[in-house]
Image 1 (cartoon, rainbow, N blue to C red):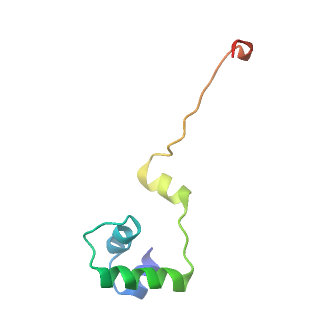
Image 2 (image 1 turned 90 degrees about the vertical axis):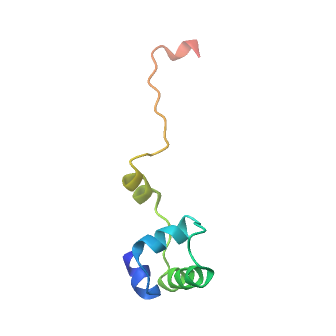
Length: 69
């Protein structure tokens, strides 16, 4: 995200806002960030998102006696 921010000339917070589709970012800035993302070939990483938010959105189940189900 920092590389994209440097290339686009914005802060990493602005890159985050663009990725999360915030209306607080001007359209021309959004375009610059999107072009920088394409130029660098960046992709979203679900593992990074999980670490940053501390939520995996996964549910674990432990059960005994699976013959009942």
